[in-house]
Image (cartoon, rainbow, N blue to C red; front, side, top):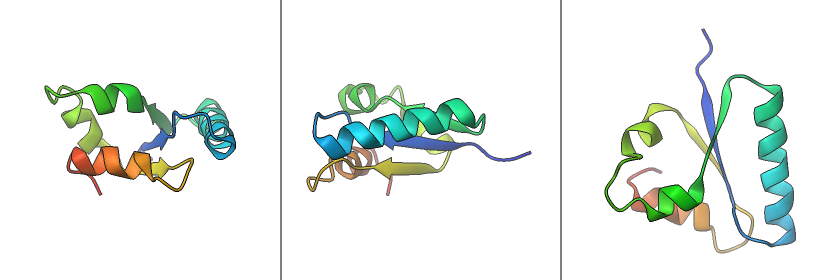
Length: 80
C-alpha cells in the first residue's frame, strides 16, 4: 500500500500561486495517493482541530510567492 502525500498550496492571487494551485489540484485528480490541505482552514484553526490530520501524512508545501506563507503557516502548527 502506497502512503498518501498531502499537498499544501498557496491561496493567494499571485501568478505563481495560481499555477501552483492548479498543478496541485490536477495532481490530486489524477493520483489517488495525493490529498490537498485547505490552508485557510489550517491557518484559522486556533483550537488545533486539524493537528491530527496534519501529522498523518507527509506534506509538500507549494509556496506561490517569496513570502513562503505556506511554510510559515505549517511551522506555526509545528510542521517543518
